[in-house]
Length: 128
Image (cartoon, rainbow, N blue to C red; front, side, top):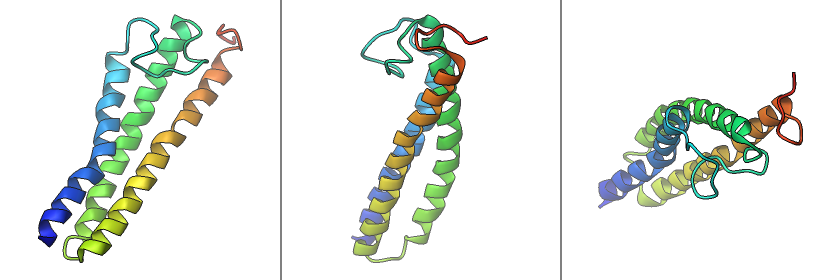
């Protein structure tokens, strides 16, 4: 029973890094062709025009790919240390790991917005 829960938590704890890797690649290589409110990196700044839209997707795609590439092996190694622990310990540390991953995912918005602000004015025109 203990190993079943560990396997479940192992898979769950790799989902966020894996999704960041996959969606990072998608945003970088196959970004949405049109500005839309359904799919893509959607913030007020990124949706000003196609230039800001494409810039945001390229930047976010690179960032998520790097972060996901770092978090995936780190998460895997951390979960391997929990393999022989009791279910409470696995659940606690697995949950903490998911919380940290979620926080990193949310914090990744700030560098993208900063890069947009640095490269575009408030109307979405490139700063020379």
